[in-house]
Length: 109
Image 1 (cartoon, rainbow, N blue to C red):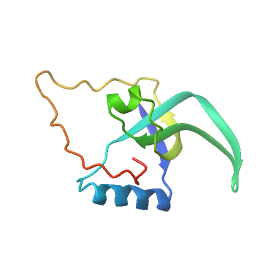
Image 2 (spheres, rainbow, N blue to C red):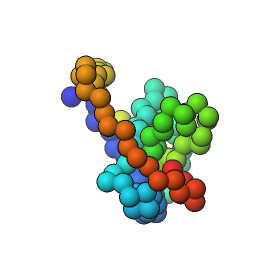
Image 3 (spheres, rainbow, N blue to C red):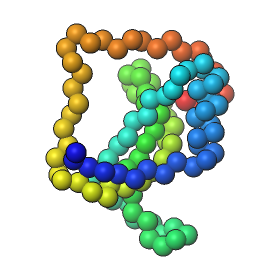
């Protein structure tokens, strides 16, 4: 293990995600987690808050290339690390199945 992070998701965001999953008839949703070197600091209702972790609904290459806005689902912080994070490579020859998706334009993702 090389790091532990805390991520906070609001109830409203969870409800929006569930609505989208149900509307698109999906079994789940891919979330991308970004860990940044820079720390954002701001004053929250319980004192100073520091964050360097964000999470958003994963995007396809086409969505990234067209610069579609990300749908952020949560923020947090790394609270422990040993300084070593490894990339989890996909095994050779193990193609992932392409997901069929129904388009609903009123959903944020």
